[in-house]
Image (cartoon, rainbow, N blue to C red; front, side, top):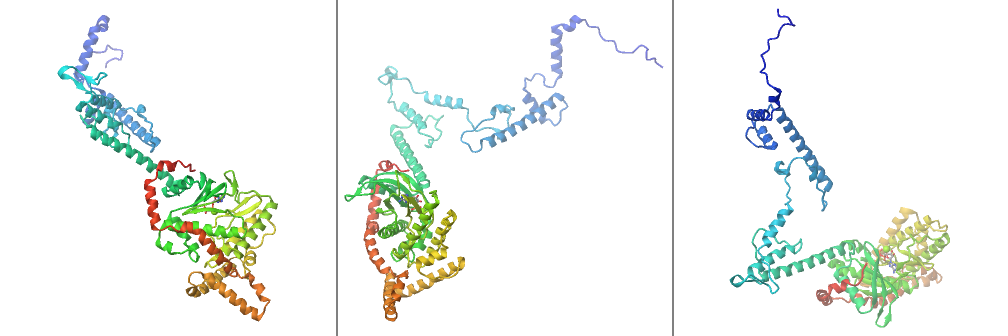
Amino acid sequence: MSSPWGKSQTVPVMPCSLEDVMSEQLAHELQQQEEKESQHVGEKRTIQEILAAASESSETTDDWLLAQMLQQEFDREHDQTLRVEEKKFNGNNKVSISFENYRVVHPAYRDDEEEDDEVDPDEIENRKSAWDSPSPKFNKSGVSGKGKNITTKHDAVICGRRNASKIMDFGPDFHSGDGEGIDMKLSNKVYNTLKMHSLAENKRSQRLHEKKEFSTSEHVLDPRTKLLLYKMVNNGTLESVGGSISSGKESVIYHAYGGSKNGVLLSPECAIKIYKTTLNEFKNRGAYVDGDHRFSRDEFKKNNPRKVIRIWGEKETANLNRMKKFGIPCPAVQVLNKHVLVMSFIGEDQIPAPKLKDADLSLEDLEDAYDQVVKMMDTMHNKCALVHGDLSEYNLLWYQEKVWMIDVSQSVELTHPKAMEFLFRDCCNVCKFFQKAGVHNVKEPEKLFNKITGLNIKGKGAEFAAQVQRYDKERSAELLAHQITTKEYAFDYYFEKSQQDRLEEAEEDPEEVVEERNDPFEYFYEKSLQDKADQSHQEVGSSEDEEDEEDIEEELRNADVEKMDKIKLG
Ligand code: ADP
Ligand code: MG
């Protein structure tokens, strides 16, 4: 048994003096010995290379290597997250923020997929300077070198290189290709042609850009419309065209200061209504023209949007003229030129009168406004033989204590197959608005309708509306049956009929005749006279034929677009 306190049998350690241990030489020797033993002997390798080698050999037991490998994996993951964050942050922005400085893995050791396409700007600079370098320095007279080696600034090679270099400054849209690094030379002729092309392209793209902007925000102001306005300003019809007042689905309204036409002064302030030329927006409006004997539906059938668009101007002109004639407060037509209608401005100093919807009237004014509107509707129906068709607080303006009726391009004749349906809708809109606004004596729409038309349709709401539609149908069927004989003017039939009826009834009961004055078709005779007057007015707008179209095309080709653009619009 050996005693725990017994003498231990350890291998004797070679004594070594402290001096030896501390000696630098020994330390150096030990270091060398260690390095020799290590597997990385003699190779000056970076950590990355060591790691690469280690990861190739399937296993390693070296703790240091394992730690490094783990760290590298960790760094790579960090970089990957960073890249995702960077993409998320920048999105599709043209200017992007780089997270490069937060990356950990050295670019040289990143995976291929991580590599950036970006070229080092210094490299570009170097390439460019190398490319530019062949050009020697010229003195004031454009000469370089002496004797045999003399070179002038017109030297073909130098010029060629300079030209090639210059095309890089043509602007980002010019696809010059990557000429850098190639000793490219361009002759003056080629260079000049390219330069001219670049300038022309630049101008064209600017024009395209403008056109695009106009087609969205200033939709209707296509070159034709601009030409029309430009001509009106040029020939003094208009003093100037100002800002846009409204831009709706079907038209755009601009303010303008009036000039004079044929020696007649226009209204000092005008509203220009430009009907939109997109067929899509108008395709639903055929219903308003269909059945209106004054406006041929043939144009719709021909599908010529430019001609179709003029119909609205013609319709609005004719309707406004008729309304004016019977004293309805409405804009006065000044000039109609194709799809551009100039009328008097309701308002002052470029500020349009508010719509009833926005007018913020006192109850007293509202009650007055209601009475005025009812009177207007009555006159419109019984004197003008028209139905507004889109009557509401949006198309009634309040100016100088009066209600003004606007927007009558869709208004229809009483012979229209849906005239009564439209009228009942107008009645509903008007009554609803004034009722809501707190006016006390507002009639029920059914009563208002019967009062205006002199009809005696019974029922309420949907039932009433259905009866109105039935009435429309019966009336248009009757109209259609007789249209063959009356050809163009359907109201001639009604005029004749009413005359006949009156005669017959007069024979039976002379007093009945007076009552019959409420017949909606009683006034057609008067209307036929008005129509003839209106039509002569419309001739300005409707006399356009194919030749005229060609003239416009020609004018457009020759038009000074820059000058046209100078009329301030919007
Ligand atoms: P839309 O068919 O686009 O509704 P409107 O004829 O109703 O066209 O005009 C649109 C807006 O332009 C009106 O609500 C009104 O504010 C303004 N406006 C139209 N005509 C005139 C005018 N003669 N004077 C003043 N403002 C007008
Ligand atoms: Mg309107």
